[in-house]
Length: 224
Length: 224
DNA sequence: TTTCAACCTTAAATTAACTTTAATTATAAA
DNA sequence: TTTATAATTAAAGTTAATTTAAGGTTGAAA
Picture (cartoon, helix red, strand yellow):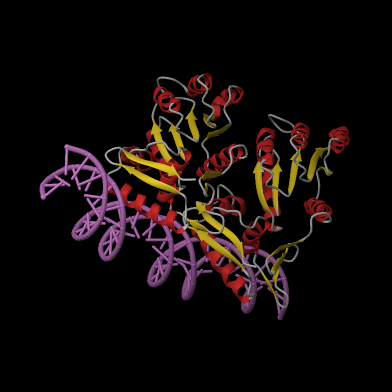
């Protein structure tokens, strides 16, 4: 699960990133409204958290632009107590939830869960490719008979591959999206996990293969 | 048993929370109608107590919205004497009981018990999973021969696991639901109780297992 | 009131699972 | 064949989960 966090108070932002990561989310944090809009428009997120008071462009403006451009990602607004009015406006403009500061960290996590649950009522939690399927809730990879558990990193990689099969994904894309572009981790980990995944796909007799395209990246191939 | 209490008089609210907790209920207290609606919509409560006179949205409006959204949780309205009329309206709108202020604390508890008993005539008081069953009245966990008593926290955790077996429940969800958002308790406590529960399940030769999913939470697995 | 037992919470030590590094082996393209 | 890229594996590092023990609370019984 990818989250975009737009919050200009550095300290709060850092704390939130730490907590969200701890809850298994991949987080990109930006410090102003303009960046929030840029990142949000990429459509790469499952949830967007917008503080209302931010430099360059406030949260409500960002919300408006995003919806205007057809981004339907669930959005949670953060409002200071004094901005109660804004919260009404925000909900009318297409925010999915709001939370007024100060809030308990646990509550934020709960709201995010609730929002993504609401979303997942519509979009199924199971990604299929060939004769296997991947459960996004419990990280289980299964064929007809058996199922087996993937680790966090394994899951994220396979998720990327399975959500757009036949599409090429470069090693750098894996790194950026899963480890973050500022990660100091060696690029080598990607190969390692590809290897693990192939082994697990083999145990399940999957008819999908992770094919390497030398110099370019990987593709998920389905052989029906 | 989870109770949502919506009452704007801080002092009364605090007193009620203390008493309800003392009676083994998990209580979330909110101070206005808008929050009451938010929390109530989560569907996480066994009983909702609504004061009628509240800021932002009054109790009757909350009641109406909740019923409108399909929340059938038993609701107890608190009315000032002068609002006798409201009480009629409330009952017509789907409240299950009312109590006029000032009231004796003992009476409140009695009414709550009565409401939840009424409810439990329909929903059985015994949750089953595999070869064991959990009695919601006396907190007893039993297999065919033996039965054994669970503590309050143990009970609530196992209840969550048994009411939706095969469904993943995160450590944070346990914390939120049993200890509350604002609890200062260490997350570790969840692990401790999981451990206690597993031990008790083992003594009963249960064919259900609490499986940990690292980083995600726990699932109750049944091996028939 | 005092005491006891049951329950709750914390802390710390251990175990297990996952992540990363690094060294080695294999493979495709020039 | 040579070289760079990719694959595999083992081992080291890290973090989450488990268990145990001990200290605190609280309520009921004496």
